[in-house]
Length: 439
View: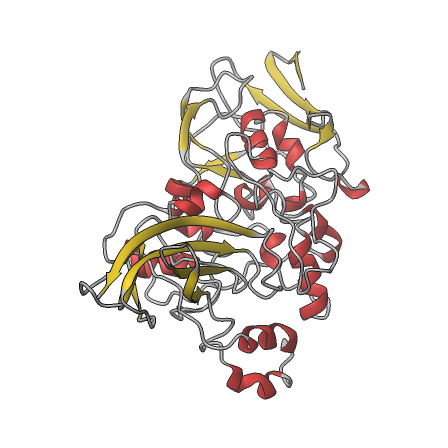
C-alpha cells in the first residue's frame, strides 16, 4: 500500500494505490481466479487544507470484488473473516449419503478455520447438492448476492423475505465477500460509523441490526418448524416477546475495541468481530441448549427430559433442513450394561409441512424430488426447539426393581441424511447422568 502526495494548483492530492495480496501461513487465504486477480485501484481525493472530501471509487466487480482487496487496509477484520482468527471454527468434511463416499471437503489451499461467509464460494456441500438436487441451478444465491438495500423487515407488517438478486454465473466463484454486505447499490461502502476514507462511505446503523441478515437467513413468510427461517425465528420468538434485546450481530459478531483500519489515523472504538460463529463452532453450539433429566415419581420408571433453548435467539437447530439435534437416552444396570435406550431427533422441515413418509410417492413428481424424498423418507420427527422454549419429552422404559443409571446426551449433526455410522460431522453438545431407584 502506498500513499502518494502532490500539489495541483494549490490543492493537495492524495492517492491510495492498492496492489497487494494478503497471504497468511504461507498460503493464500482464499482462492484467486484469473478473473479476480488483484489489480491496482486508485482513489483520488482533492481537498482544501482542513477539508475532508471522499472521492468516488469504482468497484467494477461489484460484490465479486475479492476480500483480499479490502484486507490490505482492514487487516484484523480480514484475518477474522478468512481464517476465523480468535474463534474455534473448524470446517468438518461430510459425506452426502454413504459413509463410503468420497469426503466432501474444502480445497487444500483454503483454511478449515475460515468463517462460513469466507467459505461460501468453495463450500463443497452446497456445490455438490446443487448438482445432485437442483439440476445445476444457481439456487443458492445467498452465496453470491448483488448489492442490496437493507430493508426494515422487522418493522413491516408483512414479513415475506425474498432472496437477494444473484451475481452473473461467471462471478459466482467469488462467493460471499466483504462487498457482499458493505457495498451499496450506488457504489458506496456502508458501515455503522461516519468515517473519512479513501473510498466513498455511508453511515447506516442498520448494519448493527438483524435486518442486515434477513435476506440470506430467512426465506418467505414464517412457517414454524420450516428450514431457512432464522431471521423470522429471531423476530417472532425472541425479539417480539421480549426475551432479549440482542440482534444477530450481538451474539455472532461480538464487538471488540480497536481501529477499523490499523495503519490509518482513525479512532479506536467498538468494532464487530467478523466471525459469525455458529454450526462449526463447538463453543457456540454448546451454549445453545440446556438438558435436564428427572424422575418425576419416586420409585417409578417414568422419565422426563427437559431440553431448554435459553442460549440462542432463534430455533435450534436452525437454517438448513439437513441440520439435526439428537437426544439419546440410555439406561444402564448396576454392572454398566445397557438395558434400554431411546432417541429423538430435532430437525427443520424441508417444506411448508412436517416431513412424512406418506408423501414419498408424491415427492417423485416434484422438481426438487431428491431433496424432498430425503426429508420425507426419515418420517416425522421432533420439531426444532424455539427460542425460550422448554421442550419436555417423556419415556417410560420397562425396568425391574433395582438401581439404574440414566445417561443422556445431545449431539449436533451437520447432515442428518447420511449414514448414522458416519459421525465425523457430529458434535457432542452436552451429557448428563441420573441415578434412579425402581421399586
